Length: 476
Image (cartoon, rainbow, N blue to C red; front, side):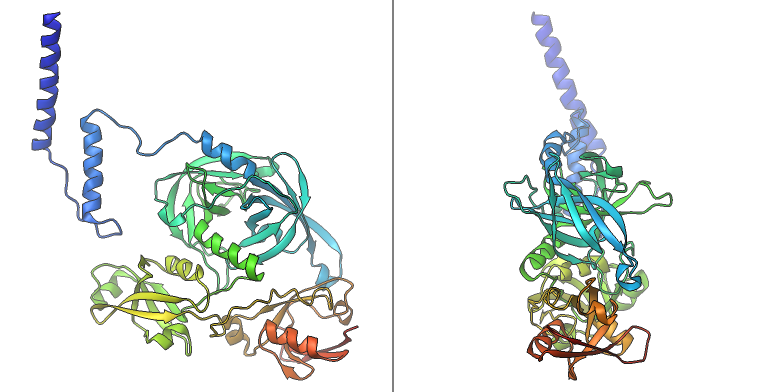
């Protein structure tokens, strides 16, 4: 027994001596890191890995057990079937097609988040829960610029997911994608976050916000609108797109970050439309050449290449050539990151902006505006005239106004068999005057129509045409 104790003692002393000697001969490498991780943080991580290796451990720093997260997420992800009219309004064809996708229940009283493209042009939306119960869903609102839509079903006590903080997610973190690919129900796949703040130019249009979370969790047709969750089962993104040549998953998928989704959901619930805030600038990423020219320590930040007259940035004194470094203390390394941060705010909100000018870091406060350079929030949904006249309206953004050269509101849809339908007005008509009175936004158009007598004259234009179109109808 005594010999055994001696052997154990000698073994422990030898192991300790070997560890001390290896740390003395091969100290941790000191790395200067110019990105978002500081030198001290990076050195600490290296020390952590070195300690694990010195003690003979190679374990993961995060759990790879996803059963609890899957059990939480699966009941809250639903199947969505949207019956869509194909060119029915324009050609009067009456033909229909269907789209399928996924959705995420975000409150027990039946609010469901999905993608705009899943329910776009839907005349009937069916939601099927994981327990096979089926509901007719109402479209609360939809936002093409973020590809997010909000549905409501008449139910209570539904399983739902809590929103996580997408800002705190890290590249390399394990995530789960939950959805209904190929019409299969409740499918769970796993992967890691491959990148953040990705812009893949899939949504199109000047006002879109693409700051996707990129992951290698398998996502296929039917997954759109499904949940991207972390290992705690928190919703950190809504799966939206893949990059593919075959039409199926080829390695990377993209999700709208949960912090942006939350803002869109709040707006749609409160206003029926998204309250989009703008800085009033044109932006681009900072290249290495621009960084050297401006004296920036690194190619970091977003370069201002245009300042709109009467916009929020112009009012605050921002100039062409300035580099935006952060908003409210959150770094803006790329244009998608800046667009996402601003997209999470509303017109009228004050923000603190750090920027680089003439070799110095500076700071200013500005008040965000909407596309029409107003601080006001619009409480009109655009569907207030749907029952009375059969039309839905939306405001023109500043890009459309500049491109087309006129102001007004766009007719986004015309209901079959309605009063306006009988005039042969087409979706896309830009309404500029009501009974001779100019209108420039939804609120003005609705008020002008409601204050008019029984006779209505709606004047306006179609994109790409110079002719003025007039539609006459009676309100009742």
